[in-house]
Length: 305
View 1 (cartoon, rainbow, N blue to C red):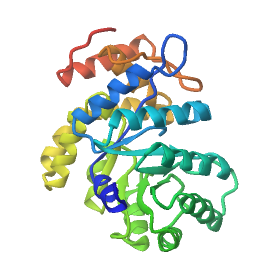
View 2 (cartoon, helix red, strand yellow):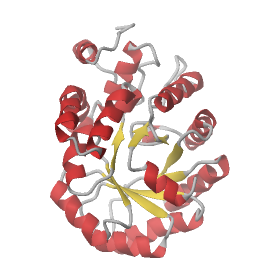
View 3 (cartoon, rainbow, N blue to C red):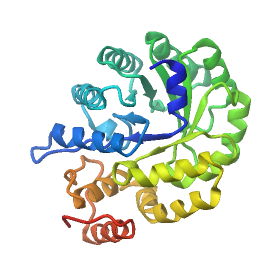
View 4 (cartoon, rainbow, N blue to C red):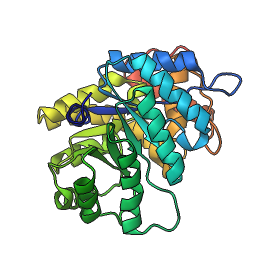
């Protein structure tokens, strides 16, 4: 897949996979392959292992590499594979090169978590990673409001393989400003806070959106994106209303249960275990019951609770 083909795919639903864990606490490879195939069957054009919904910061380097391999194998050329990379610069470059060798389409660079971030340093960090894998498309994960259009424009000018920006801040005015300062047509802009932000961000320039919910109900995410692409905001908001309780559960308490809610839904559907790694935690009985009630409104049959 070329850089331009990845750009086009990013204008759809960008699914962030979960990392299922088995009873032994290790990644459940069989469940993962089935979940990826379910996303593809549901019409998802971009599959992202090692994102935040994948519990990226709770996985070992060896586990992240294994999830890249498993995802590339399961996708088998049917969609774009966008692998999350991050941590220190050397680790991020090693992960990016591993994704390239494995046959991924591109990488998503997690927002650096270093406590001291200089704007020029942010550009240098991302440029070094992008330069290390010129054949891979690169998507930037923006969570820091200090990063502006000037930094993105500089990076875009230096690195032709930087094709997309995942903007994950709850500020559509800031997004509209940054996107236009950076070049609205230079990147594919992805609403990075999932379905609830997608209609507002689409109205001011976003193309696609990320989704963890797609693991559970890919048809709902695809329905919303189809409506937004067609400019049918009333239909998009009908999907939004169905999705809202689920995403509000994920966002509560500074997203404390973001992954737990998704895995609980998958567990109730019999698709994988509900286990998450610390510092996340499994839902309590009340949370489980609430997830089950939401699934019922979507017409999904609960097998386990």
